[in-house]
Length: 49
Image (cartoon, rainbow, N blue to C red; front, side, top):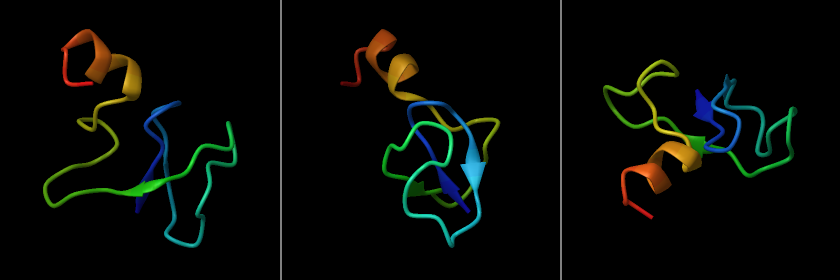
């Protein structure tokens, strides 16, 4: 699965860009799923970006 950090949705590996917003998708990391992956907005709020 791949994850869009902008709209917070997960998609099949066949997609390289998000069908919703057009942002580049990244692979979900081990132990990460759509429910616990951080979006760009959440990373900025936490000071990670």
